[in-house]
Image (cartoon, rainbow, N blue to C red; front, side, top):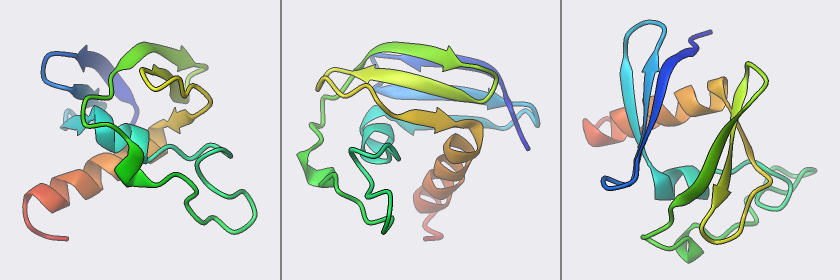
Length: 107
C-alpha cells in the first residue's frame, strides 16, 4: 500500500496535495474530499448507500483543521461543521486515482 510522504493543504487553491511513497503526486479538491466522506453520518453503515447529498456541499468548503490519525488516516474538521470522517490512505489513494482518471477523460 502506498503511504503519504508529504501532505500539504493549499487553501488558496482549494486542494489537498499528497506526495505518495511511489513519488506520485495527487491534488484533491476540498469539495471532492468532503463529498467522499465515508463516516456513518454520510454513508449508511448497513447498505453502503450515500446519505450525504453531494450537491449540498458548498463549492467554498474548506478544512478548518487537518490532523493525522495514527499512521493510517487523516481527519478533517470542515467549515460546514462536519468532523467525524476518517480518510484512510487507501481511501485517499482511491480518490486520487479516480480523480486522475476523470481529469484525463478515462472515467
